[in-house]
Amino acid sequence: KQEVTQIPAALSVPEGENLVLNCSFTDSAIYNLQWFRQDPGKGLTSLLLIQSSQREQTSGRLNASLDKSSGRSTLYIAASQPGDSATYLCAVNAGNNRKLIWGLGTSLAVNP
Amino acid sequence: DGGITQSPKYLFRKEGQNVTLSCEQNLNHDAMYWYRQDPGQGLRLIYYSQIVNDFQKGDIAEGYSVSREKKESFPLTVTSAQKNPTAFYLCASSIGRDAQFFGPGTRLTVL
Image 1 (tube, rainbow over the protein chains, first blue to last red):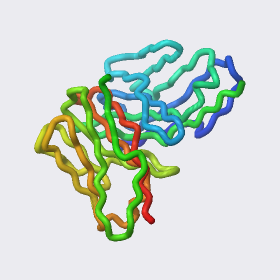
Image 2: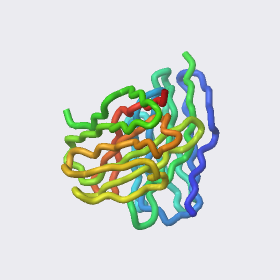
Image 3: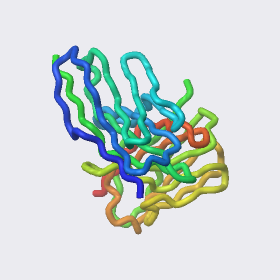
């Protein structure tokens, strides 16, 4: 059974720091992996999608990597800003259906 | 602007009432999904639909019902059989197994 874990559960950093959020999954047979951002009381914003055949995807200050063999994905945020404060969720699409398996998220606080 | 809309933003339900949450998308996506989010838990899939007039149960379908009569609409009814409906409800859509895009959510509270 596929399980997704995100560590740490919470992270607090000073503004300007580069940081890495981690996402681990137990079964390497995935179709794709998606990173999301959620602000308090809001819906989810899709950040990056990595297909199983890809190693990384980049969007602005964000870079997501995928290592299927080790069951890991990382989300790298460069030069963090207070506006990056949010909960970051990863989700894995595996199997023969469209269900996503979700991590519990990392709550990020970037302090000015 | 293309996107997903959910209404209402806040909804209050009395004991024994059925309530319907609206989800509309103009992205021309074929698949739509309903999730429930509770504090300290990951998102849980309630129902999903891959094409019009077809839908499948997710992991926690009991006490919920859906319909998919139009490609752009996927309403969710929370019935009185759902014993603990207070939660944040999120609707999403996608093209096939590509990225899922989410609406702003509806917060349902039982009075």
